[in-house]
Image (cartoon, rainbow, N blue to C red; front, side, top):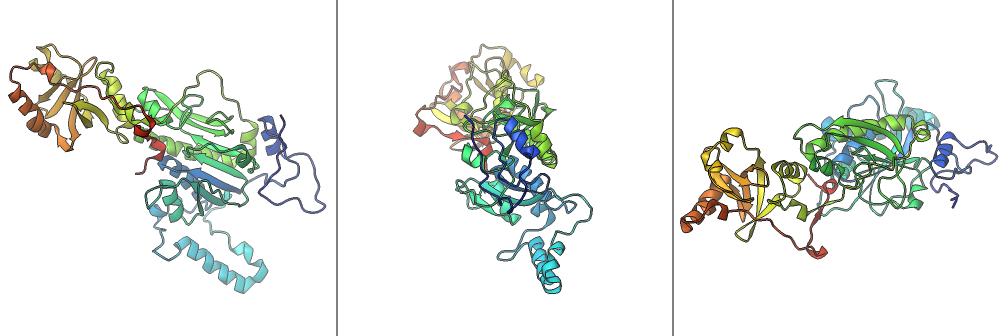
Length: 440
């Protein structure tokens, strides 16, 4: 079914204006499945009017790059780094400077004052962004999500979903937003909506790609700039894609920081040649598609009989900063806060090699002051746990392990062990956590 797109945001053609061939960007959109609109005047080159959708630290980096592109040659675009935060009740320095120049220009030059109002530049680099506004999700935190915090500091207009404002925009940008945008909203943007996605699509479509990259031990990842489509996440045409190696033993948080900077630079590159990027977009391949669902609390429960030490460490690096790994100790839930690899000198201890052990067995190693826990194929080390309160491995031994051995002097070490925690599966009792919604 062909859909006639009418542009809802933006001025109509002036009376008597010529209606020629469709512009390159509309031909590109039509080639990707959208009907071109001949009744609208569309900007064919920068500066663009952008509406940004985002929530977390990954999205904040993309927003920072867009904000910096409004004032080429004037710093990083980070108000915190440049000391541009406003005192309570007062406008930010850059905003105050603008209004002072506006008042002076209006008084001296009258109607010709407009040319004096452009931000002062130290170079001749072309301005990429004309207008920048932000849509984010509501947050229980008074400060709001990282994207909202940055937008407020930078004096950018902010809307909370589902409010998207009513201004005129050329293109939308989405990064870690977590909501499907409907077709009617997408069609309000002449150039559609771009998505900055931290994976090499079609691998790891969905809301938690960085977590699943680390969790599954991928050695290569990347960032994809794509044009979104309604009804399904991350299935639109690819405009730009770059790959990077995954640093050994990196956490999801560390990897996200690397990809956020890469994605921000790629986004600016696409916007500099937006019509051409849309024309050269390619459809995602059918093969190799995988899904990266949100992480639930159940994912954090270690299965000692099933998981190898490598799998447990991947799980810790993937979600440890969001949900601590969990297990059972004498029918009580215990959280493992700080996991470490066990070196070969510890593994050579006769105490570990001279007895039959089963997965979950716990031994305190006094020399290294860590708890050693046996899993499917070997040992992991634990430096601290949470049981009613945070405890070091030594505290846990003195308060729990040693008294248990005194009480059960004839017991074998295999009887003193962690067991797999089975959480209820009812939706009401299931805590779902997405890394993209994590607040620092």
